[in-house]
Image (cartoon, rainbow, N blue to C red):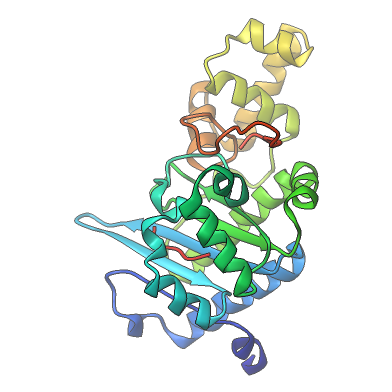
Length: 271
């Protein structure tokens, strides 16, 4: 375990003293991040989540970034321009920093600096459980140029989303937070698409037509999704799916659309 710890830097932020983060928990979080980094094939991972108490909200951060980058991040006050920090954890869509940097010179400076410090060349952040009591986000950095990364992102988007959710839930458990999962059985792509259309306000008949299925089949799909999520009706299933980040809902622009830039749908944390 010592070799793993030497390879990583772990940062925690929040109201609570760092001393409350026990060594056993620290080792467990390092293992979670290390295993996830290997499984995803990314260069670095950053995880942040908010825990809401009765009277205050605390923010916790764990990352695999080099210590020298964390010092540089603080000295340059990058938290003031970091899009992930500026974005409330209430948006279900991922953020690709490279795209924001095209039309935002301040973010471009952040991304360029992160590259110089060896964090990677492309960066994407996935919000997780954005409307739950423990919203968070997971940043993945990849040693790929933008064009190569976009192709990778398009094909692996859902896998990255699932990995981000697994990291989030695992860290929450290690930190001692009680998390109620929406369902053990994963939703199928058709079930996700059905709930997503309903969440966007599409009627049942129109949603069925857009998916190319009959009304009877669409009803069966939504009933299956409800059963997997432990919900009694579709409204509850949609709300639960949004809360736990199982579907994306366009609640605000998170990525600019710039001419010539591909546009896949799409805190206190350094990158």
